[in-house]
Image 1 (cartoon, rainbow, N blue to C red):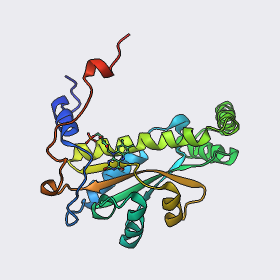
Image 2 (image 1 turned 90 degrees about the horizontal axis):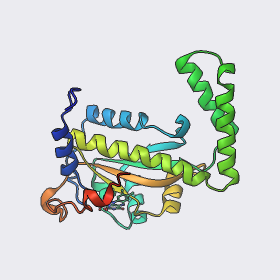
Image 3 (image 1 turned 90 degrees about the vertical axis):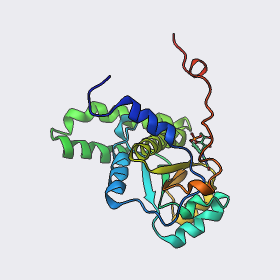
Image 4 (image 1 turned 60 degrees about the vertical axis):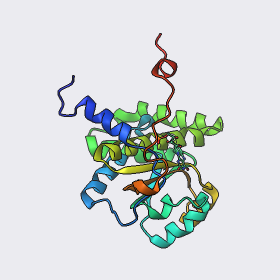
Length: 217
Ligand SMILES: Cc1cc2nc3c(=O)[nH]c(=O)nc-3n(C[C@H](O)[C@H](O)[C@H](O)COP(=O)(O)O)c2cc1C
């Protein structure tokens, strides 16, 4: 067993405890300190080249959440959960985006921009290839899903319920949130379950057996 202060059985217990919560207790709010940890898990998510081609939109305005609900097939988590995050990926990547990132590397790590010229060119040509090949939106949106995974896992470890959601109309979400350069691709509702009112709360997880999912070669 690793000795880093986190026990395997605790992790697995939390991952089994979590489920895609259908019903939240609207009266129970995530504390500011837990929320700060959850936001930090979003910031710390890895992305291809480290480019972070996304925004995490934390929707706190109750009226906006009411507007989003019908665009998410009326799912009650949108309004009832303590917190709501919309994951929006960048619809393209330009040289300016890459340069912005290289500026940030220099700002954080020091050194000269010239030292990063080769890396910058590799990133620029990869981005251009993705734009020309018509898969830049797929590429960027994949990065947002990694952050969604980080958030879900962190929430579970903190004993906070969460729901990953794709059941919404991105065009309507974009309009309501005023998104143009970015597009909504996934949502996470977070808070505390209303266990009595949630048909899913006590059902066992449905997963294929490990032998079916994990291929060893
Ligand atoms: C990308 C993604 C989108 C999902 N969309 C929704 C959704 O819109 N509404 C919902 O209630 N659950 C949604 N789910 C939850 C899944 O149905 C759920 O994660 C899956 O059945 C496994 O169950 P568990 O998360 O409870 O272990 C989504 C899950 C993922 C990963």
